[in-house]
Length: 183
Image (tube, rainbow, N blue to C red; front, side, top):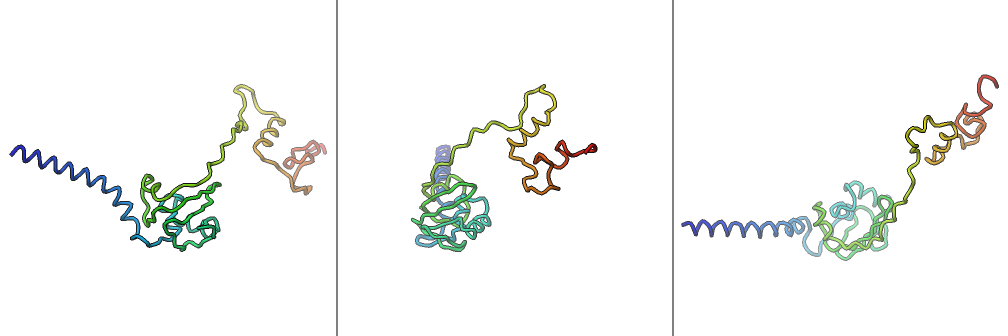
């Protein structure tokens, strides 16, 4: 009897182990259509986690940021295995070749198996010195320091050239030597 219980436990553990490894395969297979079928491109790029939401995928298609085999496509375009999908998203271009079509969104490890990534490497992040950091104890910034900080941050005032919108030195109104009570 004890051996039967041990055998039953062993069989249950084997079946559970096989079922767990089968779940990963069946999840991706269950999410996809039968062989030879196709899926909407907006749904596919969302399913394989190239975009965060399906509506973002549809918006990218309508904006001309998605190309399949070199052609701009609409959100309802049918994607098949072997198609090359180019997506411009987040300041970067992703180039992927479809290995498997799926309809439902799956986890990241399963999603990576659905395409071959031929994207160029992302551009290196620029090593920019932090703008606006002053030494501790340096005191209150002077007007000159403030202008340098604004220039570094890219803030500029009064570039339109109208007399009422900027001060005499191109700064904000009232910042020049000519404005004030004595003028």
